[in-house]
Length: 292
Image (cartoon, rainbow, N blue to C red; front, side, top):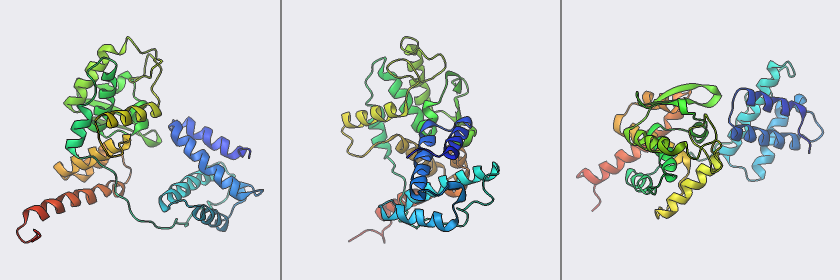
């Protein structure tokens, strides 16, 4: 079915706010689902009971609780935009909650696994970009969209910091570790021979700014070469960064700032991972905890 005009304008608004292409695409998919479920009814006229019915339909199709929560969040943002434009009087998503599902902890990699992964990048000029990208993601907890959006001016090697444009165009500055800085220096030494984009820090095979899918494919290929039997995706590097820094420092506020989370409650999921680590140490070390 054709995309409603109000959806197209909302997506243009997101692009103007410099949302990543993947995020805009996800909003578009979610709103096209809503338009399909609404049928001939205009999206501007939907009421709360219509939203509940749409969620129930998606749930019946097998959508998980987590997916429904994300979809509802997108719908809520859409109607907030319509309210600012004066196209609706009230947000029909207000007060509606998705069904609760089991809370899944973020997928992290053990430090030894990460060392095996990152040290397994071939020692060639072209592969130096892969090492720089993956070291930087783990070193600074970057999202995939943040990584591919970096420019040459984003990293200050003298101060050891990277300037990141996160969700909602919010900027933050995050420290960069020595391993990542060394990998970046190796990549920048050969970047001029392959790059055609004058600003992008990381580039694809044709010299233009690298795409998220290429980063994913290269990380997956590296994990397979290294014989890692876990699913390794770019966000696992970010999760591992947060978990490992929290385990070492215990400073939840600092981790929140480095990740760019608007709410501390989002960061608190890593305290569960930290507790699992502590519980394992306890079980192995305490005389009264050891199994007979």
